[in-house]
Length: 204
Image (cartoon, rainbow, N blue to C red; front, side):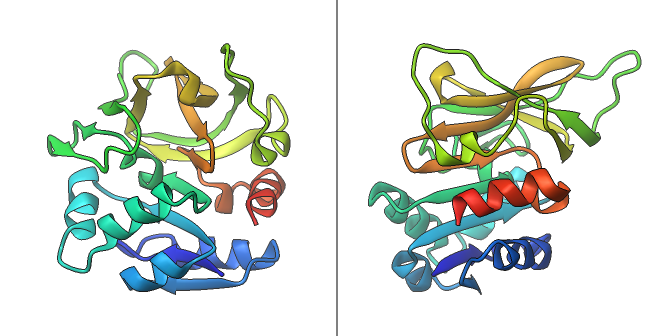
């Protein structure tokens, strides 16, 4: 069972439909106990970092359930804010994140022809680094594949080896992270046509 965690609404329907199309047995939930029992966890998110983190800590226990699931090795897929909140701190609202990964989330720089938010299709490339990556999800993503982005902030991992994919929007930024059973992306695979479905199928 794949738990798609309903934190702040948003793109839940498109994510759950895309996962089901990829062969997943999907449950959309706000129940922390369902998250703890899940075989895999997907956290999609749109909106503001601080609002999202407030919702994770609003008494339902979703933040603790996510930390517990990740600590037990449950496969985790984070999408957009579902990636950003894994880090220690977000500049949007000057707010602490889940702290699963070391690093922060900063605003994308704007200037000249570069507009923020970054909305649209951008190509991604696998990041270089000393740590070999054998993720089945990464294996499903071609270098130069295009994915759909819509964001104003970027993750800045403290450990460069956590960066799996990079993209360009005025600056080169982290487009996805991979560590052990965690994969999370700044782009939206559910809106990224064939490339996105390949990624979701590899997660399923």
